[in-house]
Image (cartoon, rainbow, N blue to C red; front, top):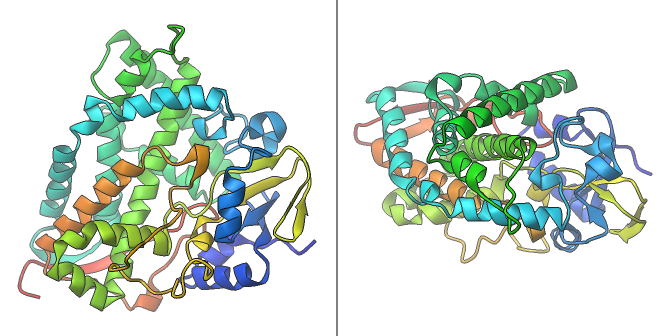
Length: 395
């Protein structure tokens, strides 16, 4: 068996995706080492990713079959860590909630939040756009959607970052415990005083037998939505801006035709998606795949950024091109655990890019591209900071 690769170490560079392509060509499945030092089979190729993401021999229920592989060991089971029939039963309620009035009427609020944050930047200057915009924008959206009081929002960034891109296992566990404790308090308050928001919808939702979700299920739903709905959108927006600014012809094309914003978001998702890997799955039996044997009980995850740059899918995977005839990708996964919040993420990113480029005809990196620092994470693909120079004057 080959030596496990430190994926987080590789991720601390702009060249990660090209290195993943080299590995995909030679192996297809690799061994990687996670934050807690456990080793995991990591699937790279697009065809194998499509095949195994829907394979019933791989279980998401690591709490039962491999507790050490849980997203946060010892914490409540989350929707993305369930198998059928529990997963389908729970997902139906969540799907209905995402079609609720609270979500359908969110677009004007997204626009308002975006414009307020851009107003705060002033007419010109230099700023870290992650700190000034791509972090607070989706945080405000997801907290509005869940009905989190404004005075409670400050700790959320630390919790989200320490869970998805933690500096240590201890930091991740501490953040998860604090987040779940807060979610339980929030749910108790909303049970006593019902609210018209997504979390209020989930509290009121009922299964066919008339029962509702438990406080533990609601807490896990809230935590996942915070992490997936905030942290991944933060990094998607930052990555998209970075890749547009380092590909000036593509930026110029988008400025000429702002209706391409949706296509630009799709290409950003394919080219450098922020949700780099899936959560762990566990093999329920021995599985031969990609020239290796995954033994029963071993952990498996999928490196979506590698699948989206697979040369077997397209001839030019390392070309950033917002005009692609098709930008098919797996940035939101596929199969039964396909991301429920994908429509909201696309909506936020499209609005944000449109508003930023309309507001600032002059927008450029404030440092040389080689000085931009990437997160050392084995789960999230993102930047430590995005220093930009901007101005409302003529470009």
